[in-house]
Length: 330
Image (tube, rainbow, N blue to C red):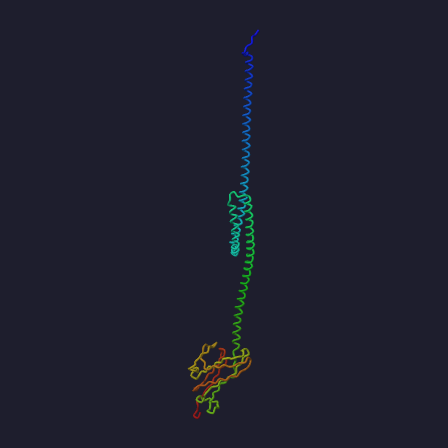
């Protein structure tokens, strides 16, 4: 018979030991599982956070790229517009006045566009605003281009008209020179044609009596005057006063002139010549007019007196009269 005791038996101790080991293993496994779960959760969170961060960075990169692309695109449009504006003002000086008139508006547009495009982080709204301003500037440039085309067309028309006018002017000048030459030639022809023709020339010496009567004589010492008479006419010469010049050459070969009033006549064929007497007659076109010219001097020499009559620079008549030496009772 066994007695009761407080000490466990060996079997009980083994059983207890196995239970404790199992309990310890279970606890360890739980702890490991919890740690593993926590680690997995941490890694999952880390991976999630990284993905979200990458996504955010990617979206921001895309947004920045898109913003840069839109801004660069607007900048390219703007630069092209400025080039067109510069080209226009350089091509046509007439447009400079118009550009000056629109300078305030153009400067305002350019300043606002430059302000937006100079921003590195310009917003979509600002880029859209810049594009709208560029479109407005483009319209201004388009208007200037249309005006340039109009002015260019007008310049071409003016150049063509100027060329035509220059040619017409040359033709007119040529015609004018020809007409002037023809007119001068015609004028000279008419001038020459208007010269009187003289006929029936007579040179008569007279002795004037105390009672006023005249007697024709050929004795030199009795002659008081020589009367030159002739007829003139012309169908071309206009009616009006006409000057006639008489040149009397004495027997000594000298022209008889008034010492106190010696004058010369410019002839067309014989040069300048001194003349004896000048008279003016009133002529009626197409008629024949009789002319008498008395030539007086204190003493007439014996010999031949040559009488020449000039009108319009031409010699129209010539005659000779001989005065004789008087006889014993002459």
